[in-house]
Length: 621
Image (tube, rainbow, N blue to C red; front, top):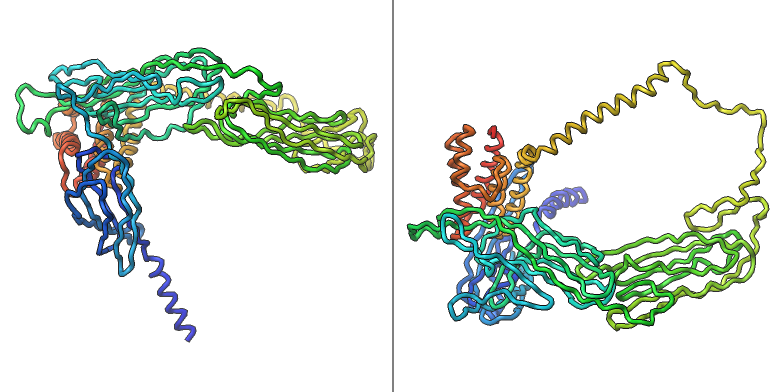
């Protein structure tokens, strides 16, 4: 009987391992605009039924649910993998501005009920028209927020304009009045509407931030989101941010910064048709966007600084302990302090310990565990003080103090920790021997005392000593000692000279890394496709194709278009079939961003783009 049960369990274990966990989730945009429809999707990775959607309070229900499903099967190394996705899509529309939370939905899979996540959606106001029918001018002056844009720029072949109302950069600071050493966050934020930003170049000029100490938080990937500003909705992206710590009082001016962007604009023909908006010709235009300067008012710290003021500005806490208060002479004692808080943590002075006379003190060991975020520098500073008593007796270590300026309560504060009494007994080691017995637990080595007195050597005085290896003058070993370093230096010189010459050839480096950059863009497109992020997918596909062609043909992205690409490829003896595929892929990618795409279009376009890049790699360009 036991054998049958064991065999049954052996068969059931693989089946249970193959059982896939049910994943049921809700997806919706984080921000929408009043009066503009959007999609709310519920997806589940199993066949399901009885979807119970929540009450769509705060939204108009337009249509749904539309049901779609997809499945795939793949074999990798003889292992079969399959997936299934069932999607329910609702079309909703925001009614009034505000932030709304949709409760989780429920669904039944194989008789069991599953619950999705909730969704939080911010509804932004619609664009406010002015008397002449245009949106409000987004440019506004603020003591803490400034902006700037472009002058009107006309394309050479049409009347398309890129104005300061459509794209601009604001200089945003968290505070315009601070104390000395008080952190403030500065950000450069891009706003654009009705403009297609193809890419941001590396041609960026930041100010020197004179009068400030700069600490940069982790920048991460640039993400876009909607924002309602001055009566109009914009796509926004934070291009750069940094923490600034003013080093002196007075008005400190931060100079303007500049960023270069490549814009894709449609060239409007003199003779237009109803298809021009979808299939019109596009060109790349490079523009320099200027973020204006801003003035920060820095107030000096109040008078009456404590004598032990550390220079700290922020909020701090101080704790500490001692390793032992009962010990012997020549035995190490350790005081450990931990300073926690946020502010100018990297600039504060380390608290001092006033050791009694008769203690041999060592430099403190400092370990910083700090993190720089948008809110400032925060974390802990661990300080370890080590000393060795050389004489017996009772000693008192005064309390350790740390003084700082509290920006929240706007006053100086002094933290105190410790105040220890140590009882030192005479140790077993005779101090006249010149060495110290290492009883303490710290890792530092104790220096030897009385270096003029050494231990007497024990053992046989006549024992032979090991002779060091010697090399005879004029021998083979003697000449190898000179020749081998010279040969090694010559080889290194040849290798590095070749590498420096290759790196100096920027055209060759772009050509060499074109496929690597394109594959990175394709991976981004694949991730967007897997998450059904249509806009991000088509942007990544376009960037992959245009950037690859720019690097392989050694032509700036701003000067590329389908006509000159085809002409250059013909000059390089590329077949007409491949040239036609290049034009087709670029056209499909452009059209898909402005017209609804059919089901499965993203996957087809991804495969065509990947195949196109692989085919171009086999061409001699």
